[in-house]
Image 1 (cartoon, rainbow, N blue to C red):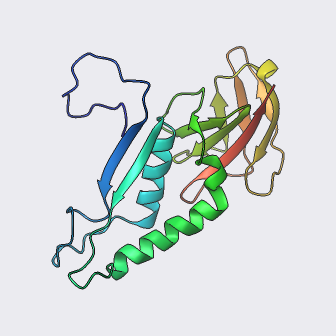
Image 2 (cartoon, rainbow, N blue to C red):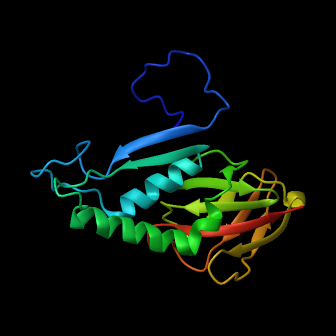
Length: 178
């Protein structure tokens, strides 16, 4: 993922403010390889897209066509699932930058103007602490259906109460900032 430097090649230098990019294969090899049937799941690809966006990056997905020029059925299936997800949640990705809350174990944030999108990818609780001053927050709601969510101000942020422990690939909370 952008800025994670898991290989240690970039030394101690900081990450540029220029757009970053995560390049990944849909299966395990670049291009087409008839024996490579080890495709990433649609959920894994969506989570990678969300993770890249939350780290100020783009996602480049390699899809290798077969020798006849057609895409493998597994790739088409994953692209279709990604397209379906983007039709519903594209607003939280397109034209955004990484949000004011940096990536955490539970997920990432993206932001456009005064709208902060909280992408919950891995949370085992029905509440989420966010290091935001309550004075900054105008409204908190689920992205799906725009159902308002209660939140409790604390000395160091707010705790958002969710209707249930998040399940699925990504639960998105939309926060309107003042």
